[in-house]
Length: 116
Image 1 (cartoon, rainbow, N blue to C red):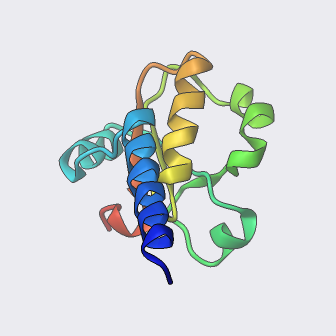
Image 2: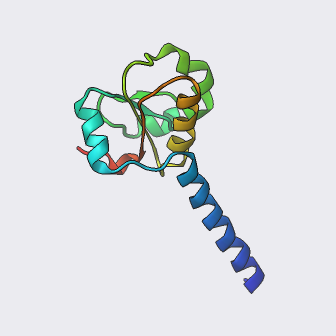
């Protein structure tokens, strides 16, 4: 691997992390717990196969690729907590939820960060 390839890879990783943080920063665990305690709707934006392999209790599966068609079926007056595998899709979903008029949207990041 050349130094140029390493530099390009490093720039790509930094850009990816920056974009994810700009879109919808990952919430603190305390905030996620607060939203869950308040009865937030928990939305898993991973694929159906990922959802079937393990999901947060009582979460609904609304894959990111189906979000535009399914988001209108959800109540806008309830807090929403989003998660995925790494937090990236949840960050994109959070932006889409906010654009759709949802006021209380939390990006919890990856499933493994959610409290048990």
